Length: 128
Image (tube, rainbow, N blue to C red; front, side, top):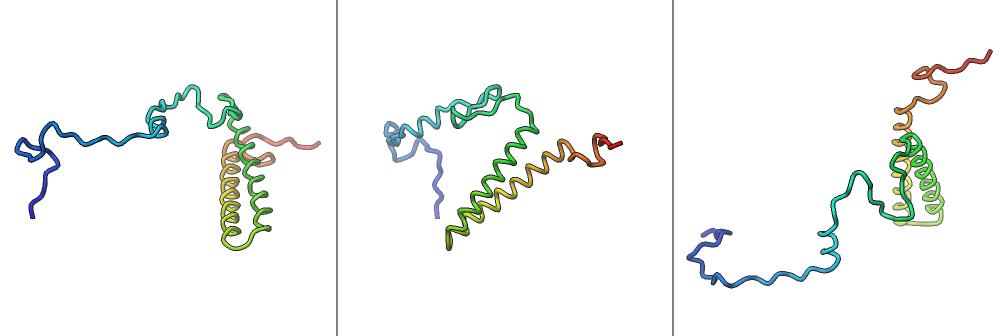
């Protein structure tokens, strides 16, 4: 069996002036290709209504993320009570993923600043 070479040679049977028609690109694909790379100084948000302040405190952002994930977990649990079958399993999976995310965020918060009353980090106030 003879292998064909992807590189055209002069002895090729295809005339040199023949070109394959290019596929028509949709406007969506043109927009995706023409999207500029993200500017790290000013992040682009998915929504113009909701943004995160660039100099927001990491601890505050993690606290809000933890509360958001906890709310998502509660909503998913409530919805799961109303569903049956495969849809219930999907929403319970979403609930479990949100609970795992909440645990990870809470651990990150603990790593930033140990919980109050802990022997690590800052000394605790004593009652006299």
